[in-house]
Image (cartoon, rainbow, N blue to C red; front, top):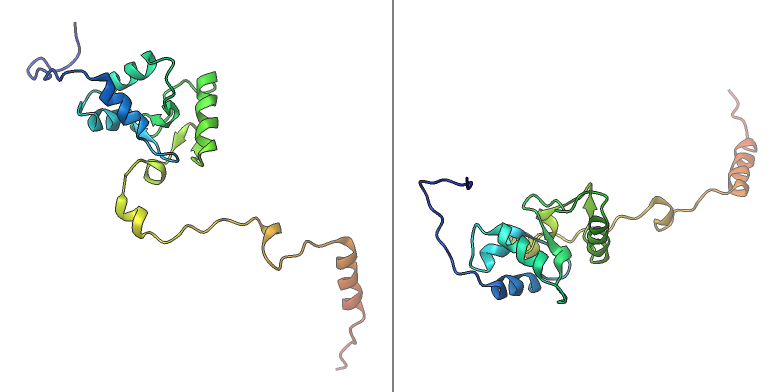
Length: 158
């Protein structure tokens, strides 16, 4: 028996693999999109599985397949698999952070919030404590010199 609601038959939209492939190719570097989002952009709303099938069947063509994720930002491949690791590596190469198999769609999603992208304050780069300007690492010589300085202070008389 087929799944789905028998009272509401799904409208059969003409399948155009070229429109799905165009949508996948148009994902900008440093951004990700979900299967459902790509289906909607290709004019096939509700056909996320079709996007996955066409992506899996397309061979020999350079596609940014690694930029396609589940709707919740998770990588679709089993964690630890070769394809999972390859997708994480490719995303990291584009500056996309993957934490526990998930990408923050609010940050890296394709056109998620254009206002935030245009008007948000610039993100400060985090600096490790040893790299801060003016911060010197303590050396044994410096700490012993400070200790000697402390010991040579005159005692206050009462």
